[in-house]
Length: 594
Image (cartoon, rainbow, N blue to C red):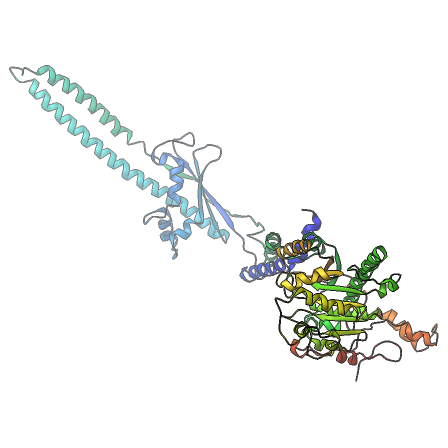
């Protein structure tokens, strides 16, 4: 992956990273002490008397490693319990043992280092000396008890052997001597050897391990490390950095597992088609009214749909210049030299419901009408049709009724709208027709071509409705709508494969709901200084020209000064109501209604 890919991942999942960082900072800030805590350590050094090295492999407490283990052995009569009794500690001896570390000397000398760690210097010194003293006592007691037991056992064994030797000598000294005297003398010799070994063991018992204190703890040192001695702010900063790294890893995992399309590059890669327009993401209050406010309230959205209209016009113009017909065999010679006046049938579809297909259809109709062309919008999504109320039209007979009419004229189903140049054929009252004959569909589209320069057909999602698959084969151009952050890669792949198999004249993709970038307000109101100069010029200030031409120099779509309150989709305002709130003033701009 390149660096730009990581930037895109952060852009898509920055909320996860920020949430983890904030959670970590808050948690550490709450749990951290107000003042930095320091750990002090003190060391008590013991020496094994009579030894010349680390005594590795030695028996008993002559082995420094075994002696070190005894320092923290948490038994009923262990060193920690003795220390707790000696210093009057009320807590668990195990907690004391956790503050002690006993190790041999790193240079190989017969030394045992007992290190205590505590929150204050005095406590560390006290613990180190107490553990050192009690460890020496513990080892002395153990060694003394073990030595006495070993001596007693050796003495008992020696006495037993001596008794056996005396008994055998008495038998040998009898008169006359016994016949097996040679065997008795051999037994005496063997017992004599055993007696010597027993007496040697008795003498060896006296060499017990002896430890002594050579350097008691007198001072304590502290290691004010970042974690141990850090302030609350330092701990929070450290936690934030760790959480940011963790959040970045989580963002990468989410990106790898996220199968939704979010960027133009991803949409073009999975659809195998160019992205004709990127529609900016609208505010929450505007999304339910997107079909009627694009050309009234959001200039950047209007420009996006104008770019889509331009792409369709240029595509159609090139086809006409090359073929001399409208692509489906319909002669259109008197418009061949003027692409903006061509008759064109555009089918708008999407892979799945909720991708913004109907909104795109409505705004595209407005964009065409803005050029002065006549537009007929055919609502062929019979399952979830576009509400005709957004164009101030009424629910009435439409496509489904035409399909049931068996030869009735389409003109009777056409309604005028409040948008100049736009007429609409609603979905109708007859419900959906999943098995509609392709001939009926072809007849409806043929008649629609004669009623307007541009026919825009709003269809059901192509992956869900078979009728859409028939309609795309009858179109001059097919536009696929997908929503950023909603349409999945699998749906895009299936849609592209299906359109290719059908041989549909698919022109490209419209990506809806793209987060706005740094140029979001490029088409908005001018900066304050520039706006002020325009206003002064309009009032006849210095450098202004009082003429009727000045009324036409204002922005075509000026941001309104007031905005209707957000409403639910079922009661959304109509186009006429929106235009009423932004009626044109005498200077050619728009002014709020009062």
